[in-house]
Amino acid sequence: MQQVQAVVAKAKGAPVELVTINVPDPGPGEAVVKVQACGVCHTDLHYREGGISDSYPFLLGHEASGIVESVGAEVTSVAPGDFVILNWRAVCGDCRACNRGEPQYCFATHNATQKMTLEDGTELTPALGIGAFAEKTLVAAGQCTKVDPEARPAAVGLLGCGVMAGIGAAINTGQVTRGRSIAVIGCGGVGVAAIAGAALAGASPIIAVDIDSKKLETAKKMGATHTVDSSASDPVEEIKRICAETYPGAEGADVVVEAVGRPETWKQAFYARDLAGTVVLVGVPTPGMTIPDLPMTDLFGRGGSLKSSWYGDCLPSRDFPMLVDLYRQGRLDLDAFVTEEIGINDVEAAFDRMHGGDVLRSVVIV
Ligand code: APR
Ligand code: ZN
Ligand code: ZN
Figure 1 (spheres, rainbow, N blue to C red):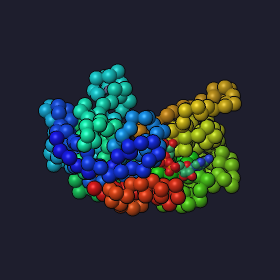
Figure 2: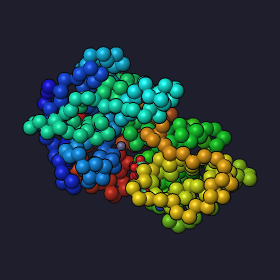
Figure 3: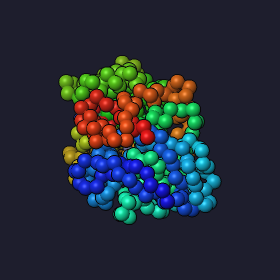
């Protein structure tokens, strides 16, 4: 066991605190990782506010990269010294999804078995089973994916959550590629990552939709070919018009990614896609949300598919090294997602800045 400094949310709504925690030595199938960088995500704030569960105290942070310090028995996938990105879906290898060759849908993902604790022994709940606003964290070895050690920790650590969710929503779930059009509704961190993914895949046009003009500027820098301010014009009509300019006869986009998580924007996505097109819901709805008044004939008549994208349907072992290589080649600008590098004591201030809309990601450098 060792003691390290970490950012903990002790009670609902209370500011986070930097405290000493106990990190057990890794047991079978576990690894201790020396964290180098960890992005500040909305989900961390939701944990602090009690929006995810009541299992306080939470050890926050989950978009991270670092160096494996030690591994427990039976660990062969990573070794001390490896540079890794942490993921929150270590696949089991033995559930129905894994057995049918689709581990990206694993139904039984896992985390470390042992618990990290406060100094008095109180068990911590690590955010998304990671807990990386900490000098060191204990995870399941399967949560570590080895990548090119030359990559910048602050940039590639972001693949551990929101950026992967967005890129994957476009290229894994939506399957966009050259010759296909895409619209992305909601251009926060997840939406602009979907735009970057679509650009990487060669999709065109790439239409960014948001109600905030600042977000649309960022979307352009990330590869959007067109922008639509949906506070000023009807996004469904605009998407249809832009797609028909490129592909005569198109009645919308081949893929529409909804990256807000609200019924009204999902409905815009539904009606803005071309016949037989695909809607990808990556925005996370809150309990109680429903889609009212959707005529079943529209559901049937338009064909195509309505999908949800969990973590961008990523398979970390397949997607992280590939995306890090594209980043190293200069084809995927992960640096553009890092608005600022901050200290481990600055998480609370970073939460405040999230509301301003000027920050894509604040990244804690540990
Ligand atoms: N129409 C278009 N855009 C909207 C609308 C709307 N009605 N309402 C909000 N938005 C925009 C915001 O202006 C913002 O740019 O959606 C964006 C949401 O971005 P963020 O709050 O930064 O959230 P992000 O981290 O990108 O996550 C988006 O994906 O993973 C989920 O839980 C996450 O539901 C959230 C969604
Ligand atoms: Zn499985
Ligand atoms: Zn996240």
